[in-house]
Length: 147
Length: 147
DNA sequence: GTAACTGCAAACGCTTTGCACCAAG
DNA sequence: CTTGGTGCAAAGCGTTTGCAGTTAC
Image 1 (cartoon, each protein chain N blue to C red):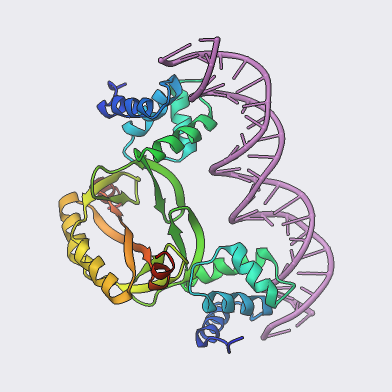
Image 2: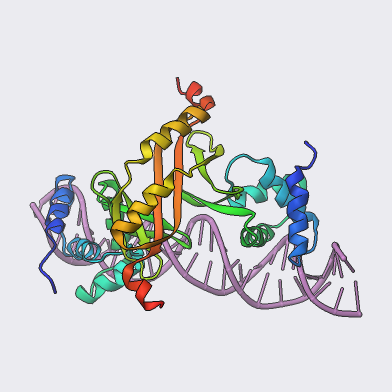
């Protein structure tokens, strides 16, 4: 049982600012998300959270994720085979690197993309408004275990 | 009613090579996918296809998509708000550019990514096995209509 | 003739909604 | 005390499965 992540109090504060109340369920859900370094399905958050707070309901997980996503604190992660997992959103301009072995995620900077995006915009005539860039691979731990 | 896309006969041939039979339902589904320049949901393929072949069933659409995806002819497209649409797969090393106005899709080359990917691999210790890169924007037609 | 394919209906699993009770402020 | 939050049960919806009849080859 580690002490609460400092981000957790920040998130709770932001929820309150947006008109939400601080509740035990939300504390639990926020803690679970921030203490896990991989994207989780709503059901996983529910199961992990329920170990700490036995009354927790799955519906509350869905509703809390919805609010956290609206505040930009959490993002939905798309992967081959699952697009219903959630992860804390990156701060600033970062992209995701996901281990296909254990699911562990890391963020990296991807600013070098700008020239490529401009080239594509010029050639296609599109006004580019958003880009998705995500890498998949094996983290160093998982490389060892598949030797 | 245009004449059948030349790719269509190629796809049917590939299906046959892999042990499938040529049927009216599959012809219809393949034609619908190849004649549309945006990613379609199974239900949309079913509805468009049903106008041409009244007996077509939704389940057959699902089963055909599954086979086409396994053969690498079709890919699932992920977008904010929908990850159940299908599009013909790119030939070679191409990425998707999607119009958020009309859904129209184009492919573009993205080979400039290699150095960035190598940098991330070096810094993180991951072995990068796959990358997703996708651009969203407004095509020239949709830019006009929002003026 | 045989094995693959078909469409329908039912089952399935994830997500959302309705509702009565509860708790934060 | 008021309003937002909660969990449960039920509804909703996209997808998959079971099955009996049909069709490609």
